[in-house]
Image (cartoon, rainbow, N blue to C red; front, side, top):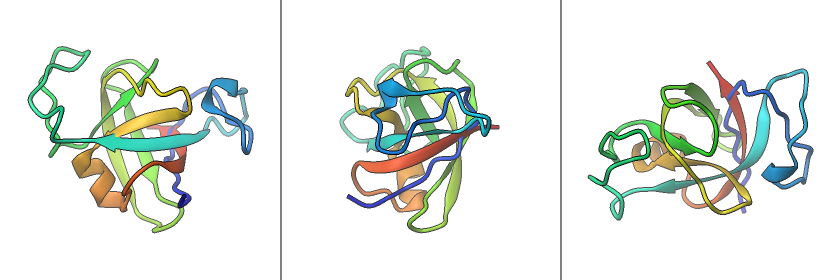
Length: 121
């Protein structure tokens, strides 16, 4: 599994090696966990926010952040980053922190499920 970083300023920081559900508050305001992506199978379906999912838009699903929250996602492996907007709920796999749209994942080189760091803008 490749390492990836999503920078998003949320009120929790994941302990190295801990599952996302074991988050602890940290002074940096960043979270670590796993990211994945979703695309064609969901394209055009209604998201939890009520808008249609567009796999070509830079959006993300998060379990608890408010819809419209903007997050910076940065890959430690590639050094590339992307800003996404939360418009859906998920991921529903307990080990994952965030699901990115296909476009957002491609822009940072995410190919599967990778470790991430998340920070709110």
